[in-house]
Length: 297
Length: 313
Image (cartoon, rainbow over all chains, first blue to last red; front, side, top):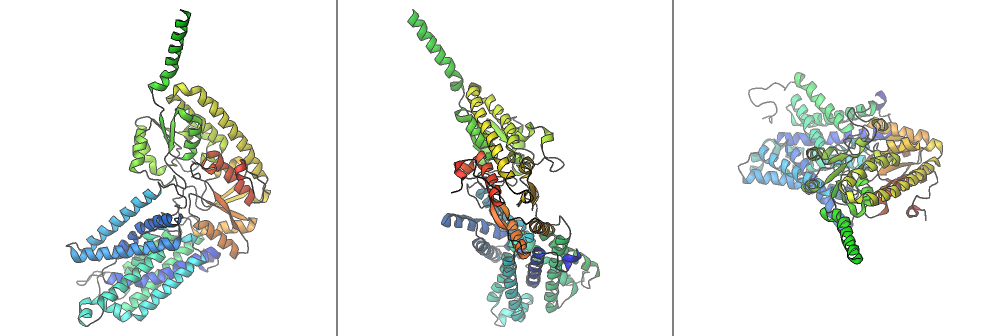
């Protein structure tokens, strides 16, 4: 266990720990902006919408090239489907009486149902190479290779830089989109960008922690950070730290102790940080207004 | 008069011999995995219509029945499954059919002491990896089919004896192929533990990353342990399976390379699913032949293939 914490449990453990940590560092701040825009669950809709995208990309690729599984193609399908999922949620909210969470619930369950039907159709096809399609559900962090870690590092760097450069703009649309629009800010484009950050995190997280657990990496560190501070800058930094630390500790535990699945242990570590924060953090108790998990005014 | 009796005899003979066939059409037998369906189809010939639900590259641990599958299962005169919870996703469908008493589990016909332990409730389901055990399981399946086609007992028995002789010859071929691997390298590294019966029969040590079912996720500790084994034993090859993702196995290769041990993918093995229907590797004999030949060659043994189909060019 000590070896693992010091990155000396071996090559595979080191690669997976570094890759997962970078993912956690990037997902934390992205989650903060989703949380403050009351869109924490949008990540859920986007990640579940990737499943039909993956299956469809597999089928189209199979039809065009005779070979279904190719990671770039599957991830492209996942990204496109996640984007459609987010757009569908927004269209439902804008054009119907459904509230935000309801619209998300409809898209999430609908897309996931479509994905499961697709998986069950694919398994009836007499083709090889379909093995592992369902592994996007829980991912396989332990099987991370150097190329995966590089991909995560690249995407994480882009995410962090974009958030740092556009911090002021993102803060504005997070707290007061009406004011921002009145003041002439391109709110719609900034919104699109914020959603883009979310999609990038979801797609790059699919291969390593899987579509169910990436949601946890987006939301839990952000919520934990929200318990500690009211200041957005600090909150983003804390979320990055919590995300990174829980990924590092979770992966180290999985490397040091037998029979601990890596992805799930990372999420447990993030949840443990939240549970420890809850009784001691300054903003845990509900105040009269606003309540703890709503945007600070 | 004599002519009349002769004609009468001929007519009655024709009537009686045709009767069982005309009275009932050939029964339909649906099997879950093709490791049951393909040999049984070969042995049954025209006496029964045998089909398998699970196709090439399909993972039986995770397979969920479609509506069309349910229709085929319901219409079948007999359903033959492996059992020991191999068909976990099909279990409810099979339980429902069991009420009509037409489901039989091949592994349940075997003596419990011959099965390898798995969980508290079930034994290791991958029995087909040992042709001597699968031979007995198939014999039970053939008896079930023969009971539905009573007029067919003789030709089916004849074909069964032919098939079983072939399995015996295959068994001898595999034993020789695996024994030709240098003793210290007789280790099979795969993604999941589907080869326990194969390993027991042919004295091959097994190291699977994922455990017996493909549903469990591997931990980093296990990956590091496997890399250490590859390096310590200087194993030249690891193997991927058609019905399991190759992600973990590729991570092992990268980890071993970082520790200075060159490991390659020794080939693709058939573990839970067979090859394409209609091809040699899509038969039970072809599947085992392919596995044994691939393993022996990759680990430094000598194997020319049980069938000329697998002979090296």
